[in-house]
Image 1 (spheres, helix red, strand yellow):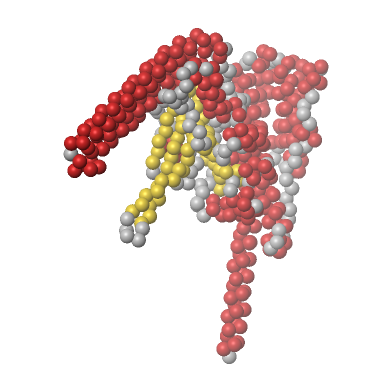
Image 2 (cartoon, chains in turn yellow, cyan):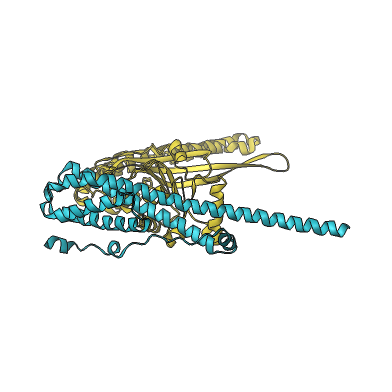
Length: 333
Length: 192
């Protein structure tokens, strides 16, 4: 990974601090305005409710309608302000931070890895019914072109109760960071590295089941048995080409993938398709999120707050270094 | 009479079941044996690519590396032996191993020639050689995996009975030679 181009302290003082000060001021104005809106809404709502209840007691619960409207106004204005705030923070702070980490990177808060690309990775056995995302970062880290974003893919199941009413339940298929990077070797086939649940539970019998599931066409390609026993226990590998799978998954890359899995502390999935690498890192942590609109005064200006974003960013980009993608000693440049 | 028919059906059913089992095991053993041959041909492909690359490589580096004449001649000679059609299989692998070692020494010796390392043509050849060596390593590992699978089937119950009937015997896996396993002594090379 290319090292940050300058000193963080200097970058913070010269570029971020003025912006953060302005933002902090805006934030305080916003919270103030929100306080006013809340106060007036409740006051008016309450007053009308009292008047209505006093003059026409036959209205009953309907008399509380003005108070309800007041609450709605508060909620809507909060939603609008929070999203405006998050937008401002991302545009003005995070875009600069991304540029600081590497000038060859671009940040697009509202864009994300497309559903088509998500499906192309073949990392998940079913297609999502609902697909969302945000925080796309794209560009180059060293010689490696990459795109990454947060993704939330869900599928639904439907069932009926005895009266014939339909219930829809949404299940998370994947939520976390989804990364697409240019791999440092040429290959034309497909190799999938998936978490190995069966073998951890059933041992060699699990492996036999996996081999059969590939033969029966439940998994694309065929099962690849690799030499590294630790890797074999952690992952199952399917590929369209036994030799190509080993060309990609060298002993050193297997070790690196294991280390990366430990670092992320999650069941990562990797797909190698047509010289591209797809990595899915499941996590419930919301990356690159703006601080709360009601953060304590001055919180925004702390260096640690910015440090947290920097850490998240470096973690997301660390895949390049961890998997050694910038080593270009083979025919691919 | 009925008892006789019943026992006949039992025996017949049992025999049929045995036959089907035998067939499944026979076919899976053949598939494994073919997988081994297929994986071996994967190695062969890469070795051929390497043979094709060597004359070009030697021609490019010759003009720069005055002090490595001996090494270059050795590489040329080993390549000539490796491609000659009447080389016995066992010996062929030895020649290829010697070729691997010689090429590795050459790539280390290159470090002494900065002009060569700036040559675009050479850099391209070096990347190609790296590529082939990487593919070769992958092909060998695929071969070893296929052989392990095959050997397991031959020795494990119950396929071992069928395998001995078919006259199948264990195959040997590729092992890195002593020379390959040792880290090259770079300092030694620089002293020459």
